[in-house]
Image (cartoon, rainbow, N blue to C red; front, side):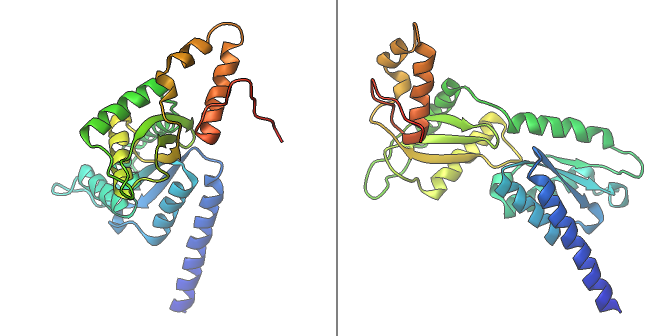
Length: 255
């Protein structure tokens, strides 16, 4: 009988995880509720956190039943820090994930949840100006230049945001890929600079033209006057699609 009960319990938990996966496809922010008594993140909860990363959603963690574990020697901050460390150990891109320690039975800290959720959504949907992105890139490259790839000096020329949900950015380089360790360095610096915590920041490497089009005089002159905004939009669309601006007099045809 005990074995049957355990199997039924596992089936119920698995169904709950599947239901959470379906809801996540329509969500902006995923709230992962933990049982504080367990002290550790369980298998089903790790599966949900993994789905948050794959679906590109923002994550907020709720530690419920804190009234049963908090005492003079173990505070809510201690538990929140322990949860953050466990998540970061498994999912490095989710470091410093917001954790709300609460007790739904007594209503302790319940009011803090929704403001944290709305702030997470604001960060997740944020659109960062291209000029600000390239100033950050210049500073981070001065601090730690990229390593050589296949005996070739690596140049990261510029960056732009291609998608706001989830945060996705194109790094235009003279190589087709960057070492994973250097990408992690860029990601950590990016999260620290723009407060992009509790979500995956996607940095995509793309080969580019020889020069940075955002610093050329011809670009600034040709995007003014009659039809300037249209040329500017086609210019950026060409960069995102091919890594090179469209040639003069040529337009991409929709197939």
